[in-house]
Image 1 (spheres, rainbow, N blue to C red):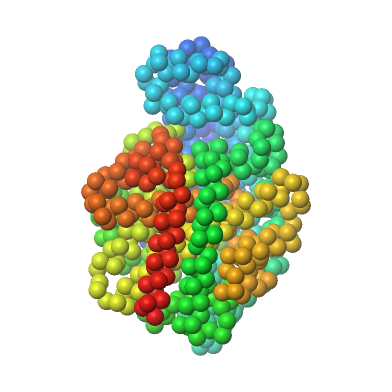
Image 2 (cartoon, rainbow, N blue to C red):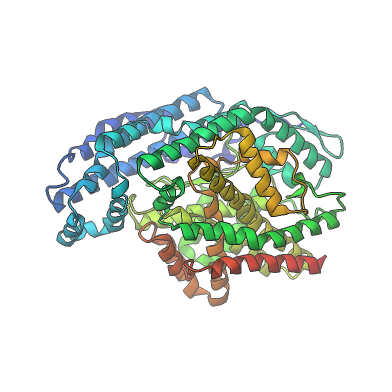
Length: 599
């Protein structure tokens, strides 16, 4: 039986080089202590922001320097924990980092409180008086937009100091998922014994062409989830309750409106993504699953079969090195500056692609300011992994360009835009693969990869978004959030979307336990928003060439200096209308049409 490696057994060349950020844990620990000491460089301006524009500018300049250091120190503690959450040292350091960051945030909370206490018109006057403040214009105005919801300075400081406690639900979820859960081994179609883990199931077995392995691994995986359902439900309920309490304290009409304000997104924009895609996409995805059932000769289409490969005989092994080469070739269309970032990511150990016990599941890109990004993925030697890697490199390329052109307070755009650069790279990889070959079977295979991308963002994450919408609606009515309630909601969402095309069993309703996105405010639906924009922008790049590329790179470099609608408009996509959403869904339908013809 294949044995999962511990972190110490993993070859160093398949891990990320966190030493680029801090040469050792001791150096990092010294930086945490230094940050607590150096916070006075900013707090020295406490009580003085009302004096004049020069004082505000001086405070902001010191805040930028400190925030850059905080970004790196916080990222290091988090990344060490995600590479191996079973390590007591990593656990302790992760907690230490959260505690220090909470203390720093509490001390820095005076800035926003004093800013919002300034008389009306003061900030605009300061901007007129001090040209050097203009670079902070959007940051200052975004803060002012929350004035009606600001609490007293003492309360804001207390909430900031409790940051670690308020974020406990997510930490508890991760610890249970990555450190405590164990899964029974299963047999594959050739009677080999296979170990099961979160990473192995979601990154490998769920996509296996071996029906016995795929379904038995699903049973093993789900049985362990079932054991933990009440603990995970209580954990998630506390996350939801936290958001409800905060929304009421701050006098928002709902949790949703509180969380959308931070994204600079209207209720209509939010609801359009959820409503239009679910309604218009469901018929196309049902057709796809019925086609899959027929082609694979399955007696029924179960929830465990959703990611089964449609053409298992044509599923080439893709090594990490081969994937890197393909991605680099595909992204050359974005020009030399972007290509150089991609090359550095693959040659300078920005990517941790090992599979080891205690490693975080899924994939992500962390982009601390003043350091290069770091990508986590568990490599499974399949093309889905190549698309996931291209996706995370999209985040890396975005933030390298944004950090080069914006300060730390302006670099991060709205979550509504954040998944556009990542999904763009998946679109470009697919276009590249289609252009490389005239082989009809290869064309069919690439179409399947494109459908996998849209499935991941328009189905998996979008239905997470629908789950959040229903959970927060229930919580605002003070309905108890229990395991039974969560499973009932998720089961209804899945049944409504899939209709009679897929059998939704009891274990499918436990899907709410699998993704960490529920603990990340209103993040899930933004994948669909980003893919909608990137589908349109990728089409513009294909049709218009360099002018569209230039517009896209300008949007990436703008960071958070523009609203999400302005960023997308800069890239040539008008998300203020329903047209791009409907066009993206029609595009998915056309891909299913092509597959039906090919089969």
